Structures are given as C-alpha cells and as structure tokens.
Length: 225
Image 1 (cartoon, rainbow, N blue to C red):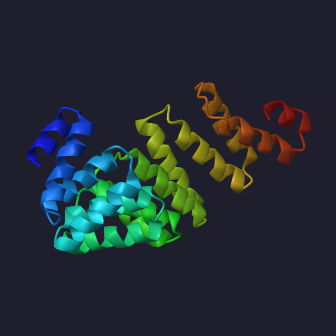
Image 2 (image 1 turned 135 degrees about the horizontal axis):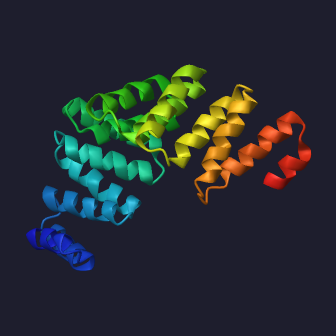
C-alpha cells in the first residue's frame, strides 16, 4: 500500500496499480488500499473501476465522508448521476464541513437532475467561501436563467466577466439570456464580443445567426451559419 502511494507521487501509475492490487490480494478487506486504488483509477479517469473499489472501501466503513465523496465523483463521471447524488449526500451527512469543491460537485449533480433549488443552495455555499469561483457563478446564472430570473442571471454572468473578461462561456450564457427574452440588440452585442475574443467555440456565431434569423435578416444568418 505504501509503495503504491509512493509510486503515485512519482507518477509511476502502473507500478502503483500493481502494488495496490497486491495489497488487496493479500488482504481483500484492506480499506486503505481499496480506497487508494479507487483514487488512482479516478485520477486516471477509469471511472467504472474507481467506483467499484470505492464502493468496496465504503462498505467496510460507512463513517468515512471522504470515501463517500470520492465514490460520488466516480459514479457521476461514469454516468450514474442519481447514485452520485446519494453518495454526495451521504458524504455531507457524515461531515457537513466538506470543502467548497464538494458543494460545487453536488450542485452540478443536482443541476443535471433538475433539482434546481437544491443546486442554487450548493452553488451559493461555494460562493460563501470562494466569492470568485467562476464555475459556480456561471452555473448559478444558468440555473436562474432556467428559473426565469433574468436579472439575477445577468448579474451573475457579469460577475464572471468582471473577474475574467475573456470568459467566452459566460459571454455565451449572457447572450443566451438576452436571446431567450427577445432582447436581440443586447444579444447581438454580447455574441459579437465573444466572437472578437477569437475562441474556437462556434456557439457565439451559431447564436448570432439565430439573432439575425429572428430579425428576418436571413442573408446575415446564412453567413454566420
């Protein structure tokens, strides 16, 4: 187990995997080795494998909040979002003081499963400790736009741009709020500003084409598309 940890620190991942598997072969209920192998697979984006070992580790000791949190991540990235939510919630039930990133990940899972008010609560928990957490600001703006709260959404996207003026994602999201509320003048301005940043993201042009289409300026729309 310790050799495995050492090899992980040296980025010798195959050797780390071999050592951790040997530890588990000797003692199949070796909790630390199971968790460390799960963490290694999570780091390597082998999410299904990570979930398998982390489930075994958590089953051996259901008081470990960090193991439940890691399991939530593995389940989320392997596409089992409902199960990920349960694991994250169990982690918080064991330790209410998990870091901001744990609140963010739970917020994302709530967001994707349509639990928007729960997502708002988690994103706001992130922002209480990290006021400039750009992803939390962006995602909270998306939730408010889905809830029809245009002004709040616009405020949040502008907060992102105040911290990072080159954030294309926030500009697209801001433009989308204006587009969805038929404020085509502001939508055009925002999409043009996003295009001017030279990003390879095609969405500003795609949506600018929609603005022109809504105006009946079909030649301009065709050019953008």
